[in-house]
Every structure is written in C-alpha cells, then in structure tokens.
Amino acid sequence: MRERALQIRAEGPPKTANLLRTFKPADQVTARLELSGRGLLHKPVAGVDVRGDGTFVPYRGGLRREELDPSGHDTPFDLVRETLEGTDR
Image (cartoon, rainbow, N blue to C red):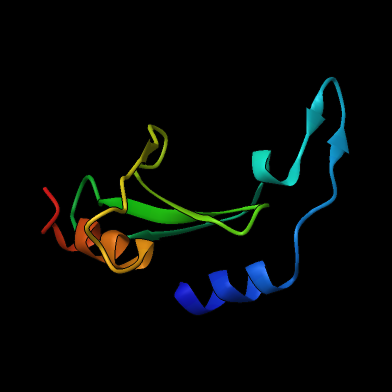
C-alpha cells in the first residue's frame, strides 16, 4: 500500500475542479487505498486516502469511514497495519 500511495503522490496534484463549487487539490481525494483484515463475518477494513495536496489520511471502516489520528505513529501506514492487526483498539 505504501509503495502504491507514493507512486500516486509522485504523479502530481490534480487540477482544480470547478463544478457547483471550486475543489482545490487539497479538497480532492486522488486515490483511496483499502485493505481488509481477517475475520469471518465482519472483517476489519482500513486504508489511506491520498489527497490532492500529497497528504495521506488514514481511516478505518468501510461504509462508515472514520479518519484516524496518525500522531504517535511513524507513518499513517503503520496505523493502518495496527488497526487491521487489532493492536489499535
């Protein structure tokens, strides 16, 4: 996941989009990378949004997505791994 996220970020920011309102690169999600963990009925889901401004925003949950606070972790990817392993609960 980390390698792919870095590749996407290296492609550069998206263009500003003008629809009903203006969406600057920081307002856009360039890619959503998601992994699921182990489990029979409710597999844990976590991932990283690659934002247009180059930041990575970790989250957990599939339909009910919850942004995670990456402070206290070396990278947002470490937080995703810990979330899927169940050590962040």
